[in-house]
Image (cartoon, rainbow, N blue to C red; front, side, top):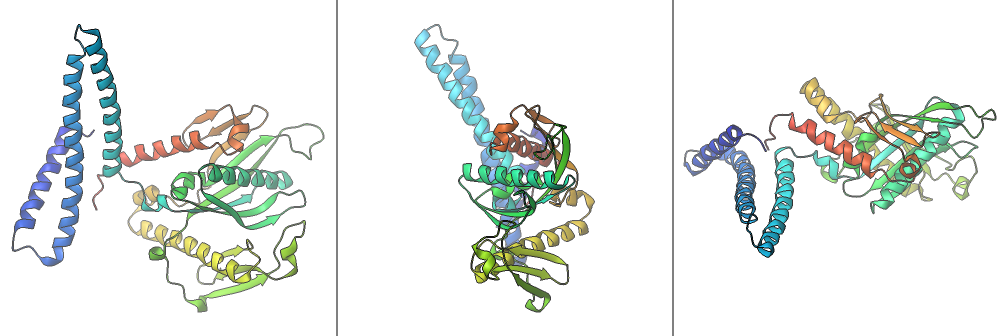
Length: 358
């Protein structure tokens, strides 16, 4: 919890706003803004007082737990345990209020995976990453689908785009953006030598209707083509896949998820909205300065974020310095431990920022 001096300042500001709201001379245009801040500070103070009251109850229960009566002592020890758990929960709630996550964290996500250095092996690794994310999404109860792909003859992916639809998907997966490195003996390697290959990942939040960027249809070039990979599927027979180019920015998206050209076009437009919304957010962040831009993040970081070492069954996330000796389990979609560590680090970073104000 923040120091007492901070809470004294919050209480003082709350009292000042209370007086302002009671004044008849307040500018009507300012009233809504003041009411919003007043309500927010009130929620902080209520939570803070709840914690203070709980701490007093814990102290009393701890004193009673020194009783010589064994049964009473056990009862109070259990009460202390339950109160401590409740206190921990309240601290988390207060922390979220003071340093709230990005609103887009609750959204769905698009994941673009591209094979990097390593030729066919890199494409196979890109396919392994796609399976890992799909399995993780399914374990979370989210919907996952491949909306676009360019397959190699070995069933790897030169490029693949996933749609992850579920509350909190972007908040969990946004840290995946960057370069992923794999160390293993390729299937095509006869001498048994370990090779290093890479794949790049970019994660974008799915936008809501309110966040959509206005797009002039005249600024779009829409192409249709036959869908499918190297194997050739039923959709190859018709031009059902859709590619949309936003001419002013050069952003290109494509979708071949469905047999229907109309449905693929609708999905591609949603992806384009997400890409353009991210670009707009980055531009706005740049105007507010480099520090804010760093906090928002670009979603297109090029640095190495994770290494997958198959011979040692080891995965290392370089963003938090976490190493796990269970690569096989992680690749099956058990990403929870890594994602929890990344989210904890993000919250620590948020605490270094000024107190959130609505």
